[in-house]
Length: 199
Image (cartoon, rainbow, N blue to C red):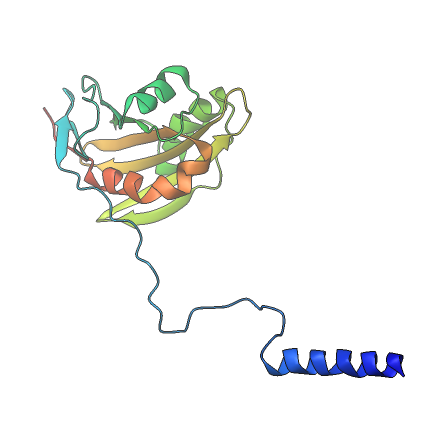
């Protein structure tokens, strides 16, 4: 008689647990009206610099002093400067190289993009992804990204070609490969700020 009693007790226990909501935990999702957290606010581009050849770019306060002789070299911190100097990424570092390409004889923007960036990228072991065209303010930009993820030389790139009054500005950013997507909003805010005025 003991076996049926144990069986009955086990069945009652299972029914009791099920009746009390003791089903296995399922994935919980927030109610439909729960607000989605906003993207982190971008820092204000409160500083600006103009190179001797007329390229102006804005950047956040607290960054390293830019180099602005021919074009602009811009670094968010010492890790950004080391990233460009050694062409190997340091996490958290951003290095920008922004130059004017005046009066080029290359007939199309796509050809100028390839001419400006393909050799640069391949020289550091990067194959750029598919070129994308998008509008930023009133400028039609061509951009691409790519990364070298080899442990000994990993580096990511975001490159873009922006038309200005006297030609095009080439815009290259060097950073850690796994930070390209997260840093793209800031990179594109800085890209939007780039202008040219003849010196």
